[in-house]
Length: 280
Image (cartoon, rainbow, N blue to C red):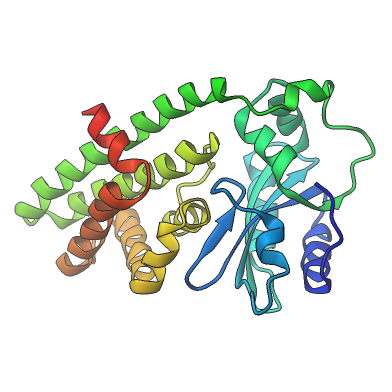
């Protein structure tokens, strides 16, 4: 969807476009301290963009690049993440244009959502993405495999949490940290995949959490009420890496705090409780 952009959005879009090899930039969502909006959570762009006093502090964007391969995606993603314009943090998903075109023309649910519902911020592609416009109509037939795979992610997260409780009881904190990291990764992936049909190619807990908070509005409230949660996720990531090399400096308090918050997310975030309990 093309629309006239406010000036501050033009500045951000142009800054992203200056990264090498950018084909397209789509705006998927925005967030304030207390709320998040995205095309995956019944977001209406016109409802918020022109509302007086609405000042987002983060934007969620989807970027297509010419290059392929994990390394190219990683480089572009890090360049964009380092941008902070008008006090707005940029959270990017990056994909090669070839892969996106394949997904779109196969009727993929995620690709359809982006193509049909997002705001196109930048377009440097001379050729069309789609072969047949009729194939880009959203269809609920794609939701069943998405739901089934999200269930699998949630089941694994729940299983890892059981291991965390076991090793916490034995005071084996290195092993508890390793399993807690795995549980958090699987939980955030389940939340993201259940709503979008897209699996982010990242093991970074802070990045996964930032993705999830755009897609699951309840997480924006979590972040506001518990600002220490992201620093705790960073501590957990450090402990996870240390545990792989035979040392671990994480405290019992941090493990218990993160485990408690993840358990609450299992039960309170829309869709996750039903996924876990229906799968049990």
